[in-house]
Image (cartoon, rainbow, N blue to C red; front, side, top):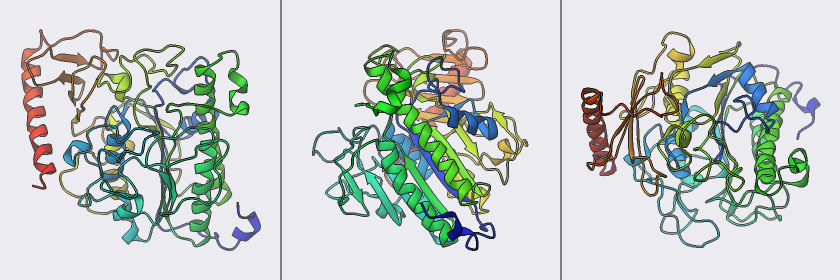
Length: 436
C-alpha cells in the first residue's frame, strides 16, 4: 500500500465522477451474514456496511448459478439473451468453457472506459476462456487490468487458471485466496487514485464456493464446527475481512464518499439442504443454488455511496444484479441502451418510488432441485413454470415469502396473465440470441 504522505497533495480534491466497485461472493446464501441473523457466523464488516448504507432485503442474483449472474451484472441483460445458460466450466479440467460472453454485448467496462474510467477485474471471471475457441476475457470486454481466473479455484493456495493481463502470474499463489485477489484490486485502486482517475473495479471472490477451505486463523473462531462447516464459515470470514480492508483502503485514500461500493452473492448456497456437508444458509427461504425458489436466487446485497446516501436505509422493493448497469449509467447521466432487463434503481433509492417498475424474469437449465425452470415476478406475485404442462406454482411473496402455499389453482386468471408475459419475454430473449 502506498504511504499516506504520498497522497496529501495528490488527493486534495474529490473526483468529478464516482468510483464504482462491484464485489461479489460465490455461493454465499441470503442467511450467511450475521446482519441477516446467522446464529454462528460473524461478519462485522458486512454488518457495518448494512448499518451505514443501503441494505437490500429482496435482492436477486440474475440466475441460480454463477456464470449467468456474472453476465447480468456486467450487461444489465438476462443471460438467456446472449446464450450463457448455466455454469461455464468444471474446475480441475482442461476442457474449454461451455459459453463465452459474445463480443456484441456491451459491458459496464465498455461504457465506462470512454468516460475516463480505469477498469479492472479481479477474481473469478467465468464468462469465457482467456484463449481458445470460447475466448472472452476481461480485456476483450473493456477491462484495462485483470488478475483473474476462468473458473473456480481452491479458496486456500489457489494455484491454477490465474492470468494477469494475459500472462501467467510470476509468483506462487499461496495462502488465503480472498486476500490474494484483494491484493491486486487494492494495488489497482491505489494507482488509479494516485493518478486522480475514476476507477471501475470488479472484485469477484471465489469463496465460499467448493472446494471450500479456510486458513487456520479464519477457522479459529469456528473449530467446534469441525470439517466443512468450520472451513465454510472461515472462508466467509475471510471475505468479510477483505471487504473491511477494501473499505479501509477507500477511507485511507480519501475516496470513500465518492465511491459506489456494491456487494452481493452470485446465487444461493450449495447443496440439497442445509447440513454438515452443505452448511450454507438460505435463511427463511425455500430452495438453494440451482433452484428458482427464493433461496436459490435471493441473496445478501448492500450498497454504500456516502456522497449521495449519507444515512442508512432498508430497501424492500425487488432489485437485481441486472440493475447495476442501468443504475450506474443513470447516476452518470448517460443514456441507457435498449432491451435491458434491469432498471435504474435511483428513483427507489431516492424515495421517489416504492416498487419496482419492471418485472423480473428468470430461466435456467439442468437440475433445479425441484423448482420449475422459469419464473416471472411482478409486484407481490411470483409464477414458477416450465411451460411444458407440468405443475405451475404461484406465490404471494408479500404474505408467503417462504413459498409454502401454492395459489395457482385458486388464482388461474393471474397465472394466465403472468404466463403470457413470461412467454413474450422468453420469445424476446430468443430473438436477442439471434442478434435480432
